[in-house]
Amino acid sequence: MAKKNIVSRARLVKGSRWYIDFTRLDMATGAETRHRQDFDLNEIDDLRIREEVGQRLVRYIEVFAPEKKPVPAARPDEMTVRQAVEYVAGIKATLPRKNSRKTYAAISKKLLAWCERLQYAGVPVSEFGKRHARAFWDVLLASGQYRGRSLNNYLVCLRTMWNELADREIVQENPWTKIKPERVGEKIRRPFTDEERRTVATEIEQTDYWMFRGVLLQFFCYIRPVELLRLRFKNFDLGSGTVTVESSEAKSWKKRVVTIPKSVLHYFIDGTFEKQPANYFLFGRKAISAGLWSLQPATVQVSECRMYKRHRRVLERLKDQGKLSDITGLSWYSWKDTGISMHTRKTSPVATKDQAGHANLSITSIYYHAGEFNPEYRALENDLMG
Image (tube, rainbow, N blue to C red; front, side, top):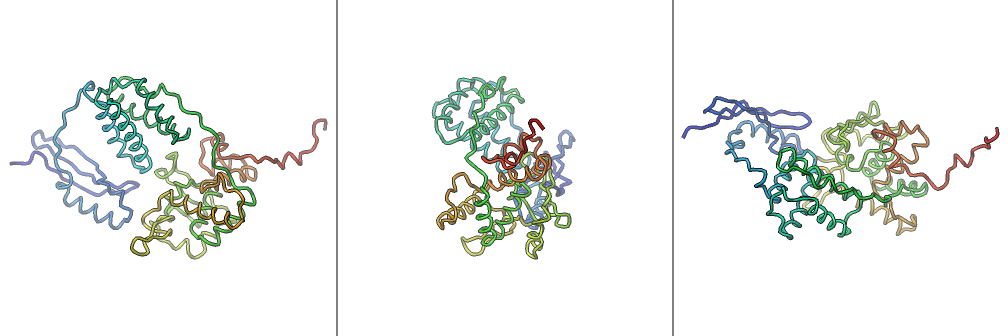
């Protein structure tokens, strides 16, 4: 049987994202369509292996990109809640960031489990209204598992999912827009006091080479913990003393270049840091034996929770030794809060805003923690009648 389609002109395209570019020719109509698929290439951290896999895909593109049978479009009123949620979850599964994919997958799973339990999963999605959305939201609130910020992140995801359905005319209204975001309470996280800062920083410098570099990058450069994990050595320009956070890796999807203060630059040009392979992650997971690994530069990045746990063990050790009295509210992320709180007074607020990559000073103020004692006002002269 003759082929209905011919796949040709395949090539590997490299950039911030790698993909295979190829053309499909419909023999019946003579129409050509161009396709770009990543075939999960970007999940392969080792660039040499990624290159080999990419070239193999190019060579055998007809095998890996077979002709797809057309799927008849479902009528909007025929799509069930289950089908609609799974449909949007499939769209969100293609997002470039792993954390974003995980968040959408998590809230989709929770919503579907709830719908299945109450037998809503099989009803038309057009009948899923504010009453149902409110009921599910109440369940999340009552669970006590989530705080205001996490709940609001879930609400944003649910609104976005229904917007995708509305854009495709599968639903007419978005019931999630009628639910108000939850109040975000005060942060549990707090900055280090001066004594805590010196004690913990000294301990980490003496015992953990790579974690201490992470402390410096948070404290002076305000690079978020999740952004630290995405940093590779190629992001550092030690000649100019800068670090580039690429737009694809930044929280705000905006590229920024931050400055390493001259006073701490020597920690990054010490004969060890600058000699690492450019494509290695700064915080990597390197196997040292069967089932064992260590935190050091590698082609596979370590998980975010590992850095929090590693830092937590330092705090607990110092508390057990009597060097810290209270570690409540202190975390790996506290270094960024501490740096911003201290440096906003020593530099200008605008300089701090720019270093942090914030859109405005109101965002910077979220990370700024005012101390109970204000030394500048203690020293203020009586200028009332002067």
